[in-house]
Image (cartoon, rainbow, N blue to C red; front, side, top):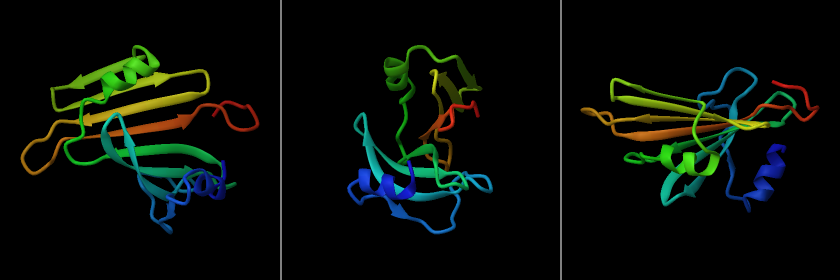
Length: 132
């Protein structure tokens, strides 16, 4: 999908965020964002495109306090191929399908850092059907 196609599919809710990169890398900037709700939780969706304006990733950043999404993803995609709980402070789980990779990062709130979840969904195969 191109940025215009994402804007159209979102009913105009996806808005340009200029040159700001949301956890992007050069050539893979998140240049659209929109509010998104999934499984009763509020997220901000960031859409990342390559230099040819092809959608390569969608990142959902949960509002403060959004946690416990890994069981929701497990019910949709099955058991993760990896699931690492580092000292009970952070949990990273990864799923792969034939075409996609899904990565969930859940942080446990400590002190001034609120608990939250970030979910990244990336295509594993480009539009020319070559693996990324």
